[in-house]
Image (cartoon, rainbow, N blue to C red):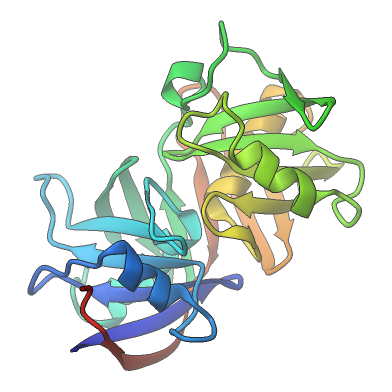
Length: 281
């Protein structure tokens, strides 16, 4: 057995267990990760976050994300805001602008005076090979055959892959049915996050996201960014958009091609504790 100090946090109800691995390496095998994420036998969360020392000269930390199923993923926007709050609240940095390394690329976190954090998510990746998505060429929409129907989706990478589907009413959208089918569609080699977007106005959307390896969550920061990018490319949205998710509201700004996406929203510490984890055998 070993004891692991942790912090429970959330961004709009998208919840995380955060571990500080800056002083000593922390190896969490998939069995332990699934135990931590289990809401009955463990702590319970959508993702587990690790704060590690930087490996790149232009960053202050390395930011790693693991889904509830034990798989490591490239990026998580709500987690990034919690990451920023964690390293400032723990005194790991006094900087208000925090560049971090992720598996999906370098991002910059900006800690605001209130409980908010703005994240410079970098420029979206739109070429199919970079998402990755199997398609002959880049397009604003792609036909995707799912469950004996053809869906029109946008495909965007925000450091992790997203498929965005416009719907008339997210309350009636078949997220639980189509979400897992889109997630594991063979045209997405690394699986994909599935976003269901309802356009309310040019500066306002509603969104539900079925996250890869986690299922539907209360909020998805990269999903909100991807939805706005897809909506902008389709001509439906303006530069600054309010995104209402089941857990609350994010504010996304994307000027357009080649420019970074900026996401602003809250990050909250819920409690700290110590977990007794069984060693894998």
